Length: 279
Length: 299
Image 1 (cartoon, each protein chain N blue to C red):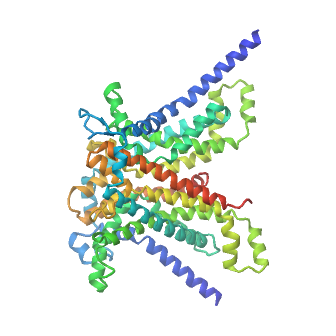
Image 2: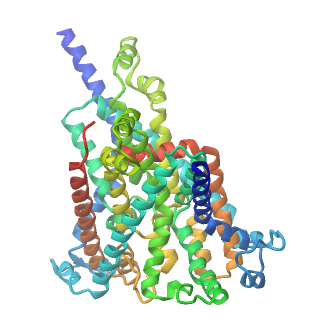
Image 3: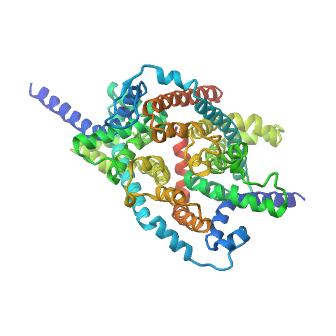
């Protein structure tokens, strides 16, 4: 008897989970249908699997270009965040004087500022840098990467700071006595030990930067520079929506996410949990 | 004398390393976050349309005073509060329920976790577009086929249902994420504590309410913080799902600020709202953390 109820409960839960993924199913099956078939039955599997709409959606979204831009922005931003934040956090922990405490406090306290509060003045500052120092901060991938580093700094420093506090200093002292300078101590001894936190930072930042829409929409105006969320938004904003085409476009944007999830599920789940718990 | 010089040099070298390691990130951070935040406060006291050549006039607290008679903004505050309270409750209840399933001994737990967490990875913008189709075309079709068209109609055309749609999509996105945090909390409860409760004759519900819940208070703190601040600041789903419509009835605070600045070109006034928004977010989340922290049990 108990076995049967257990079985039924499991069936119900699995049913609920499938219902949970139902929207993704809808997007997928309708990406193969023509307009007429889509409106005659939205829930049935397609009568044939044609890639026609994918090809069209790819062209309209300039998909490969957008994908490339997203990759560049995500990878470069994260590489710089990981490098600079770990360096900063290490110095702040190992020289825990008043100045360090103040710097750390500023990093953490500003985490609460919503993006909407700084978006407009940020654009003014970047415009000023462009006009007076002639550094192209706006409408370039480099400028966007720079701003991502600024926005990602707080959380990364915070996570590294917490981890570095828990590792004993003795190894570093031994290396110093052996004649290593600070740079070598950090890069050959400390940085490799930070790997768990590095993975956490990377996972959290991939989810954020890959999906970020508002900041890129404010800084990038060139069509050729659009990231995936931007090109999706323009694709939807252009004309009255042709849903079958839109579904193909949406599937295209979801596929990389699913591949990422399948490939790194363990790290993702762990990273997301670790990132939140230390908050 | 010589020793003193060596120590001195060492100190100077250490300082140089400190500067080399800390300054690059601090510089970027200052230019991207600190400076805009500070001059943003300044912008909130001027009137300006965003055109570089047009004058910026100082208006004192006028922008702030105007906010209190701005009907559109005040109604966006109401939507945001309503949306946030309901979403936070539902997300946490569902997330916690999921977490209890996943930490049970059921064989399907890993599959459940994998499936439920998935939507969180897809960005809010994309999710909004996916659900837009479901709430408009698919719902209309279901209504036509089944005849239940008091539930199944185009939700996004009805102010109240459009807000419910926002809640549904946000819950769909966040519940799996919140589940992960609760799972972590539940798994950190020592086995023997639960066993001891069972030996003392506590049933499922009593163990849950009187043993497990007090021990996962830290998870409650985090989850409430995450959901509160994420819901209060919601923007992407708002843009793609409802666009604030119909008739601004689902326009949340973040979107109202965005529209004020970049669509209506009232930079100073919009910035004053942005500062008020910051104060609101900070106050609400800090109060919540203070309250729930108090209830955490020391292990």
